[in-house]
Length: 563
Image 1 (cartoon, rainbow, N blue to C red):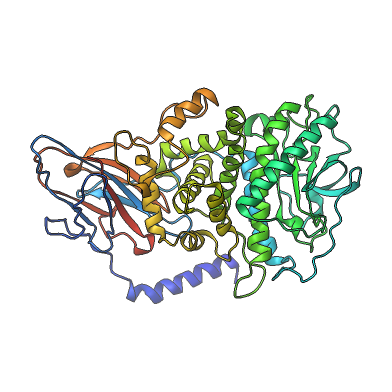
Image 2 (spheres, helix red, strand yellow):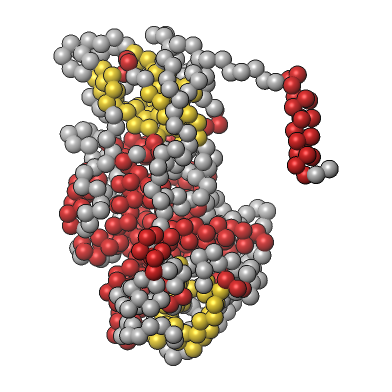
């Protein structure tokens, strides 16, 4: 039977078999009353959550006893689902509403070519680990293998991606590059492609890059995340500056969608492939002022961009070692890589953390945190349109902003202190584990994911709300975003929002008729107003059809009283 007919036939049989036992359609939830469950009775600056699956969708707010002052609540309709891309349409109110937008109907910020390439590499690593697992390291060897560092002047041939769709299983997607180690330090050996355009970085310039990596960025990342592997037993991370990275995009692509400044690929730590360099390598663009390979890249641009890219990609390298090579699961080795959304969040945190090492040099700090602040601004402008927990884990710019904000909040709240040492101990706990994604967050914080999501989403609005006694558990420690956005807009880049971008719509609670989409880990923000002497009111939190929300979505209303 032809395949198409076979599918139709099976579908028909299934339909016939199930027609007599079709599940009844869910019934609409009953209107809320004054005696319904989900009562909200909190003072100013206090918060609570209402689980609509336990209260028949109802949240009941008390009457306002004051004859002169309004009551104001911050209400966030959210999903604390740990399932990537989990979503469901909802409405908040009581009467029928127009159909809410479908998932993906809101224009999303488009990731750059570099972010899409990064996503492809991270996804490829997950598949390669399954098909050709690297040799596991269950425990440190009793006698460490002798370390033979790279020596200056060493000439070596590397296999380097020549297309954005490079595949470790397809040698044609790689090119051979001969490069020379022009400067070598304790932790870093910097090779330069022998065919790199000239003039490039001078020897003094190369030495300054190596010193920066060797003495500041390498120690910062390893303190925060743990050690990288050393499968080539040279005790060093190789930095390969090659024009093959420049030419991953054409000049027109570069001008329209950006370029790849550098990358790490876990396939280099999987020895089963002929394309693997069997070394810890970070790949970087080379200066090309004349634009002979793609769009032009000046020496100063390379020296500014590559350090930021290095700390980001080096976290991925460390994460691969910690999760895949070192920490085996009960079912054996290798363990899965970190979930992409949390892995990416940690790399964006690495950018900020690396930049803080340069303070009070605010200009250099700007170079490290510009992307994080820009992305965070995109997310805070419309959090309801974006996931925190998603499949891709790279997402658009707004999703990246969510990942960074979330990790930043975790560090501020659960590091057990305000010292850098305490922060490093916490971020290392997220790496040195067999847990990934949401279970990793729960294990490292000792807090349920719904509680973490509730506190994080509330903190995004009230952390530094003026003249408001924000509880400590709802605060960022290292950032005051209401002042940071305008400050960095003027001092760093006008592309960063000039004002705090999270501005929830203000509605009267008793007449609220709202609709939208719940997305895993994120929320829909509203400020509910209750006039002086106003009677109690209720919110019915349901699907767009007025039925009960899925329990697996872990829907909840986070409520905080503002006044």
